[in-house]
Amino acid sequence: MSSLRYRSTRSAEPLVSFREALLGGLAPDGGLYVPAAIPAVPESAWREAASFPDLAFNVLHRWLAGEVDAAALRALVADAFSFPVPVVPLEGAWEGVYVLELFHGPTLSFKDFGARTMARLMGHFLQAEDTSLTILVATSGDTGSAVADGFAGQDRIQVVLLYPKGQVSPVQERQLIVERPGVQALAVEGTFDDCQRMVKAAFVDEELAVLNLSSANSINIGRLLPQMLYYLWASRSVDAPPVVCVPSGNLGNLTGGVLAVLSGLPVHRFLAAHNANDFFPKYLRGEADAFQPSVRTLSNAMDVGAPSNFERLTVLLGEAGMRDRIEGERVTDEETLDSMRRVYEESGYVACPHTAVGLEAARRYRQRCGTAHPVLVLSTAHPAKFPETVGRALGAEPALPERLSRLWHRPTRVATLPPTAEALRERLLAHAGV
Ligand SMILES: *Cc1c(COP(=O)(O)O)cnc(C)c1O
Image 1 (spheres, helix red, strand yellow):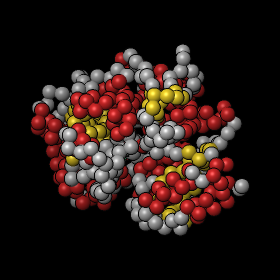
Image 2 (cartoon, helix red, strand yellow):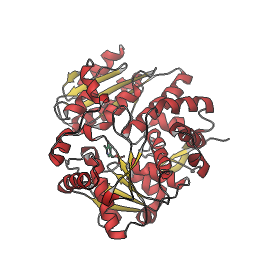
Image 3 (tube, rainbow, N blue to C red):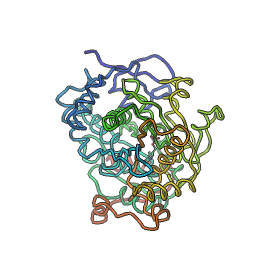
Image 4 (cartoon, rainbow, N blue to C red):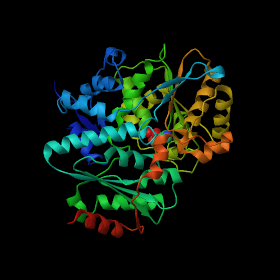
């Protein structure tokens, strides 16, 4: 079988291998990698799978054939997806709404799917080539912990995390600083923007070329492929093509769903549920054509003013295709708290603030269009990651699951860094011993 090729969103040529797209991150012209052709995946690949890893293999081997052999891929997905992926039907007034819980991985958000798969695929290629690399990530939330956990202990890969000191929640900080093999956490005395600026400077710093720096944020195609899988998996739990509601920020999760549809999954419609950072809903209604500065909200993992995967959606669907298949909703913080309360009172379900944005978009859709189609809402994080907000909405904080409470018994390791590119360079070179 000849292997699938990838191109930049900004030019049809050159075509590169999956390996090159994965290890490169961004295309040399500044675009994002997209598949040059989409493999058709037959319904049996997801309907007849015996488990989530089995489904993952059936689908991904069609995308990676010729680059990752079948036995290695089987082992890789079994190791990456070692946690449950339940679909929970809601009750009462919410009958017909299904919550796809994507937060049962080690760091309790859907970012675990992408990070764990990407780490193992990178490790696979580096092993064969006898090279190593350093993943550098600026983080303010779920990506950092998923990447730290997903890449920890991978031979040949070092991870360096930068986060703004004192500006992440206690749970988030603990998830970033627990000691992990091959992972360095750096608390930067500055803002998230400082962290991002330092990372960007490091990528173009010639003195640091020896470290073979790479990134692991949602621009990487390696995160998108695994994000198709749970859409296929969840479709087995509903009896008609669903309306699929995705709490969105950078639109990476939604792009995974679009790839699933383009490879054969029947979906009635997508709902892109955004918080006050509502460029995309406005764009879909024809009311915006430029990105906006981001604003802070209670669903902070979705605080994105310039969604990076918008460029991918434009290439994959075209403008008309996007407006045809996707509807957008904007949900304010006040409405998010109301949604958490309403869903809890009416069905007993406790949702995190991001999921609550999705549930509110689903409720509005059903008011507008009726309940003929099942609605699948992606739940992107565990409510216990956001105890302050859940407490504010429901009057009681959610119980800490064991995976989280265990973190307080583990040793931590973190260094403090001034917010300058020079400080980061020194640190990286000293640590690499060059
Ligand atoms: C990252 C994240 C999102 C947004 O996902 P995108 O792929 O950036 O659209 C939503 N919810 C949670 C909890 C997240 O961590």
